[in-house]
Length: 597
Image (cartoon, rainbow, N blue to C red; front, top):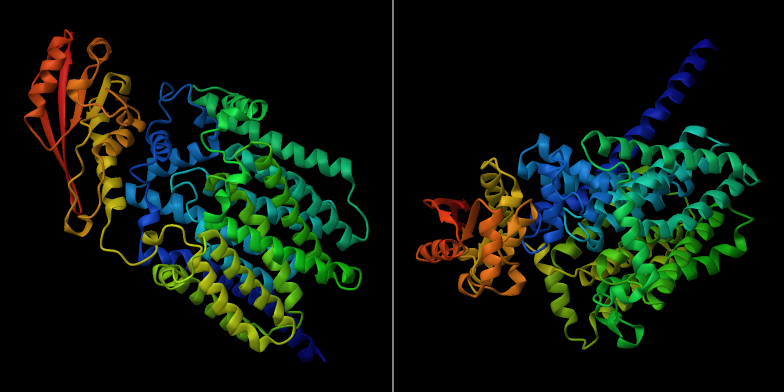
């Protein structure tokens, strides 16, 4: 009898270990999707030379601890991202920093999302939803790899995880505090996530009721989660204050958002009315539309059976959550606010969509699948998703035979794929068709085909390193960035290597990126100026406040023109120093001309 009990004890002790190994395996599968896509092409991993917003965050990464750097810029309100940039870039080399900030944070969010969905739905729906979102390229470096969206999404995934844990256990104080803190960090990183608060609250209340047959104690739960949110905000404020910056770091962002809400005309640059049919040419709108059909279909199937099966109850909750989230975004868009375009405003919708996808899988596949077949199916699905993204150019070339708008193509492809997914209720033998359809749809949804197909041109990576090298050289001057003025002539382009010979990259983009890391422009590149067309008044301002002119040019004769302009403005220029910056296929001359009054 004792031997039998010992065997039973050993067997039961193996269960947590087996669950841990399964969770580790699933996390590896989910994470491998973007990782393998990066091995094929790391184009989307590095800050883009043409995106000033990303380079401002890079600038914070290297100069946050200087309290005079971007004191009044509203981007300091995204303090969690700014602090992460500062910590990572201060501790790691540039290339490693990009991998940590772009891929590392993305992987953290994807794994948290998997565990958040595994609690209500179990392994199969969570694994397939995790793979689906990990392969949806709309969710990769949305807004750019050095943009704040990726971290905001990771924090929201953590909030989803703590929300699921809070719903499972009766008034778990610690998890409620972490839920509030995670959501607050998400909102501080990207204020748009505040729109998902009703979805998160609804999922917590309804899931808790489903698990415990009663609603949670509202007041204690609200106090604990609010305490976590306030505590995280205070900690951020104290950190900011410790480095000589404002305690109320979020006020500039709050004022900006308030002005947008009060007067939607402030967003005319980005906003388009529904009547313009802008959405028919946007691939991610096709994904969201098909997702709405999927969620409504799941609701139709699951809602009548919610009292019979807990699986159907959770499926109803998460499907309704996506419909509610999409309705909120559509409402904002309808009243003149930028909510669905451009892409980074719509980004938060990807996480409720993951919940709707998991709900659909849970509704379609009601039979238990053994661990080994499920793992094999997960690997096949991951491979299909990777294939669809990597060969998106071929898939889209074949789809070019249809003269439909890109958004309509994607909507049709995903609607068909989701229909195949729901038909798994009839037979699991239809799984290969569903996986193949999702692979094709995912390939059609890739907006930037060059970011995932194999390519010899490494302009993004090479440009990234050159810009950082130029910024490093300027910082070594040991004078305030406000006294260093950067310029390039309009019409002069970067001279890349043979692999990128078809690229027309303005030197002005490099100028803007370098400037955004903490320096001044003689003139903004978008003003299309040359040395001769810069206003004399501007030269006077440069001569009065500056000490170094940094000039990007392949023509050494232009240096004498720069010196003449400085002399005419009353400055005394010194000898020019030439730095030849070289990375991969790009060689860029940087001239530094010191001057005094």
